[in-house]
Length: 259
Image (cartoon, rainbow, N blue to C red):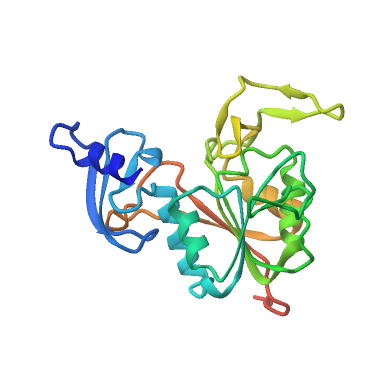
């Protein structure tokens, strides 16, 4: 993949870049060039060394900022990718757990070394995970409030859910695009849109277009506050629309004080 990316980005007969910068990649920690050949930077502004995209670099920079000792923590990542931030977390995390949802498998079982987990009903014990990581997953769940509650339940005190999700609606209210009915059928309120899914050829249905009010939805679901982090740094290859990173923190006992 990297050879193809490099050939596409730096081939002598390739198209003129829309954006180009150089610096240190937060995902692979190498000096690199960052090049975009298309105007939609979120999916096209690649690192020449690892092939990561802006949201992955923003995610890793945020993890380093909030949890500089992340390598020592118990990390669960739902639906990880094969490269980018997922690759680094898996390689360097001492207690890294990757999971996918396999509808025909029991929660907690392993499928080719990957744990089966349903975010709406996690099999992890209470307060057993330091960091839950999801990258563009929360726009695909049918019952987000239940997911937020399960993540809060399983987080250790002082832990966090650090995640990306395209906040398409921005300042407008979030909009539900599809609903899962009691009989298992899906009711669509808008045109069905699917994103890539590493374990399903059909892809993942987009169930909700989130706005910045996702922070309020998380609080109403589980009582935890969420930080909305927006990074813009060309020296780290971080620039794109819909590039926010969200950090939902479960405070340590006694951490809250009266102001």
